[in-house]
Image 1 (tube, rainbow, N blue to C red):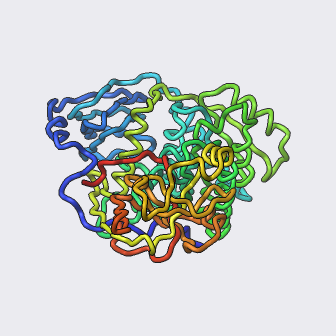
Image 2: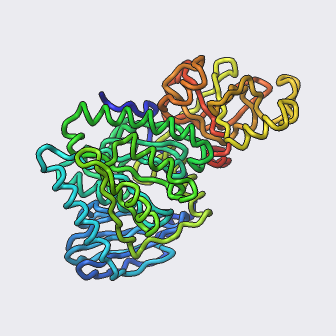
Image 3: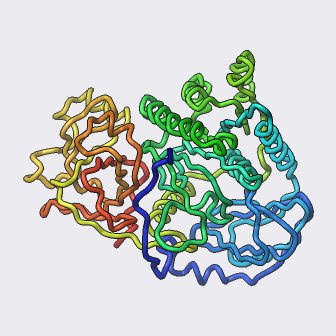
Length: 487
């Protein structure tokens, strides 16, 4: 069974990158090219702002970025990025453009530990019977979880494996905008600049194209709607485990799950974390950046049965270059991911398409947080937003048609949707709310304009094809409104 994925790829190539300010090209050339020589087992750490462009070229030797090898004499361009180029044997880099910070790091003992973990996973794959690694990476925010996941996946692919990588953090998108949980099989080499690659597109591309399985979770934290989060994890795990059983090479390669730091709160008794372990039959947990978390999980699983039910807990070193990304950076990053989804990056530019659709042809649901549901229950239906009769009102709040405990309510389009993302579900618009909630995502739309007089909505989509009678879900408030995506 092939994993379903996005069916709304972009087509044409715009002349400019809309995510890059007009003066960015000039800024990128403000500093002359210079060369840096790195010793063996050292790394070049850099932080690049969203209004900057930073170029790196490997002149000699060998180096990698999160496990992905750099091609010699090929210029790489970064914007809104924090990373570290690591070399095992030494190398020389040519650098140009601007960066907020750049320096050579010598404290890289973590890399030896990480590559040893990769060796351990290779040993599991070579055993008879095969003990496919199903790895969960956990820890607080900003300690290197994603870097560790990317490195282990990249090394696995370089070893000839085809692992599945899963992102269960709704704050960052993987091959999609934020607000989605993703699973995708990595069956070819990863890209240095784009990481895991890009979603399906039409036409030639230099980046690897992936077809991810997507589920929408339009809230910042799993604990905003834990019952919804659990339901989505269960549905995703069912699809992923079926894929493992049907594809021998993928099953042998295993899976890697990157998690948000919010799952590691001891006050929650790690309820959602344990749910992930159970649903995906995790047999190895890598903890990073928290001694208490490592201790708690070790105690929890130390009496686990041997064989397939055993869970190994390993404490992994935090990389020296791991730094906190503040709220402003994360907000810019989410906006950048949305822009890249519709317009592409500087490497692969896309040209989205505009669709004007009458209200009557739309089946739209709004995702509700637990706080909004509690508020409506406390004050009653007549105490909320000023929702007068729709045709006679200029209120910006959407008109609700029905509400239930599944976290969704049917609405009529309104101005409040402008600048937001809409998920296209695989199920039909007349499906029950529970089915809509649990349905996988085909792709995403951007609400460019809502005309309440003509009763039409103008959407931005990566593909000219209409979505028919599919259910649409608006995650009000997450990710944040982007008012300047289109003019």
